[in-house]
Image (cartoon, rainbow, N blue to C red; front, top):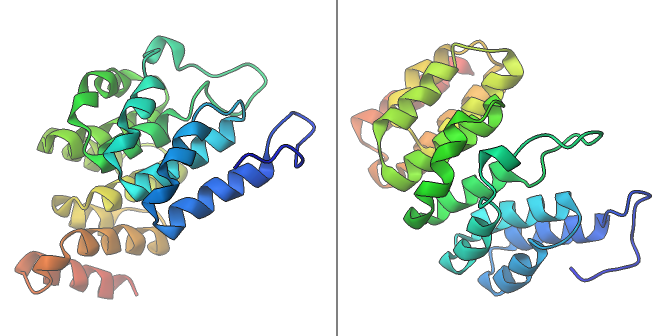
Length: 213
């Protein structure tokens, strides 16, 4: 995570990016402090990988550093000329805050519901649902499944699976995205409700998955 030798022509840190991703997959919270430090790295993709791993580790200790990246608000969250990304990894940051359950971040996440880029809006909806439990946010994601192109629908499917939004099951199965993406989303619903594996809702989702195979 502190490597200085592996650099791209634009100054990126490929080895640090991979290290940050690996630390999240290991599932060991002793990595949290190093990942928090990486949120200050000048390489956008290191910051993005760090936020994604903090989402997996779900340690509340990361909340203040993640919230700091949202303090510029929507006005500062615009594309950077000549770069394929925004100033900060806003989507990954909001998704991490949602997974952590950082309710104190609601006021920072909510303005991103109006962001002009749909995928950023979806990340905000996903996070707001996790932080508030308000069905409105889940239903707005369901509505988004009937809009936009297939690439956009893949993003929404991933978001619905990540929050385990059971009311979306039928809409997921009917979506015109590829079956592989729909199955992954439905798998997310099942995993989110594993304690109710034999419930009517879980059996309904499993039947929808069977029909897609």
